[in-house]
Image (cartoon, rainbow, N blue to C red):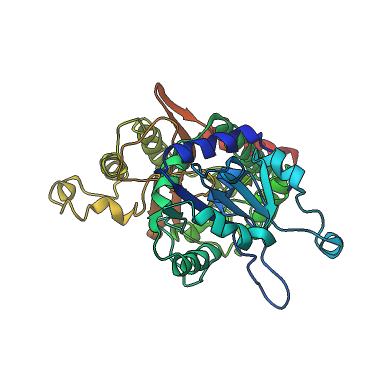
Length: 434
């Protein structure tokens, strides 16, 4: 791990919140992610399963967490099962957690080797009646791959068919959507690293630079600041490519007169940042580009004020849509009379702003949470309106990450340049020095 260890206090309190929400005589299992094969004998870089990490702080493959709060034997109420290392593993793969290290990282007293899981499982199951199973229930998830948690669920339900089963997903989404103060500190670290990367690239963008060169500079800054890497595949989209929402080719030259839309964020200690900024390739927006930029910035600032306890995502998006309509009318992209007559189920603004404004952020960039329930203090949302005008080869999206509190919003990216004039000043200053 490149990052500094998080105090075990976070994981101890997270498990306490989980146990407080489990029915009597429950048991809940959480498995590490698979080591995913790439090609030949190589694997993709391992990334821990977010729920397991949230509850244990253990960032290692082949890990199982069992939480059984009402077991008659106290030592079986929380058990962490780890991959047992040996001399060969140490030589080829490096250091793995010792039991002592795992206890310190997680705050869990009972640590066993994963090889012992099968012998301990009956002791756990025979004193439990409600089995909580943890599948990927992120509402954006769709995959044909039979991942480790799914295989575990299929196996244990066959072996213990008389147990009552419950879904852990909704409960974990509820818990994870409210951030602990230690989580906010770690997320702020991810935001600060992202800021460093943005300031770095403002100093090197010029006409003739390639999108992948910008991506490389971002990656360099992330890694040198001990981030895991990118929280998601970065979007470096110049000119017309900015109108492709999930453009990730990042292989075109950036031309004089174009605007580059850059959507990227560091992942630090498995927590994500999510930033979008748009900058002029030559260091100076045209009047039209700045007009569109400032329209998006105005919507973003007004939308941020709507991220308050009690609001709902559905209501919020409808309100942001009305804000966007007014800006698009001012930009002469929509006709006021046509907007007045539009079908409410198919608003005209979606021609130029076709995605949502906000999503949960945390251990995953599109983090878990119930978007149909009211917002609460402690939640972190992105705020990312955009205007995309293919006929002008122009796409503008601006995004910051916002913490909701009882007394208002905290912009976790408030130190990152966002005003068009400030971006121009920084870029032009670097060009003069260069």
